[in-house]
Length: 151
Image (spheres, helix red, strand yellow):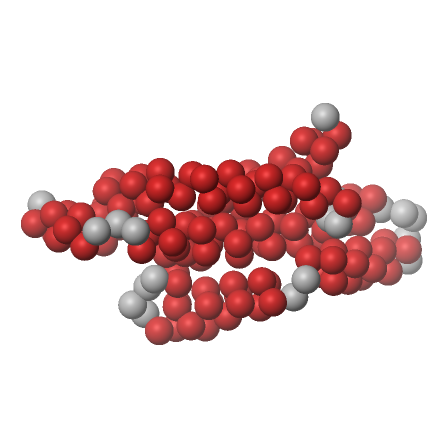
């Protein structure tokens, strides 16, 4: 039960961030794609979780030692590191689901007169997330098993 309580913020918070990162990685805007999504995903996936967790724990520990031991700040850094780490991996899983959608789905949405946001929200994302369910569950199980690394 403690593991479930400790991992809930990472699971709940990482899926929306991962979806936004996946959409940003497939964006046609070069600033959104390269500067934001690709750079973030590649950096977070390139640095091991243990390194970020230890660094975040150490930096939050240094900040909280100046005053009385503030465990809220002590736990905040590993939770956010775990959430961002999981979001980077989920972005790749969701991007794979987005790439599996046939081009005809986009063309059908354009023929109905839907704009970009409605096309993604009503037609593309539900299908992509359905395709990505096994990978998403696999990522959540991996996050659940990493309990020793993060908080």
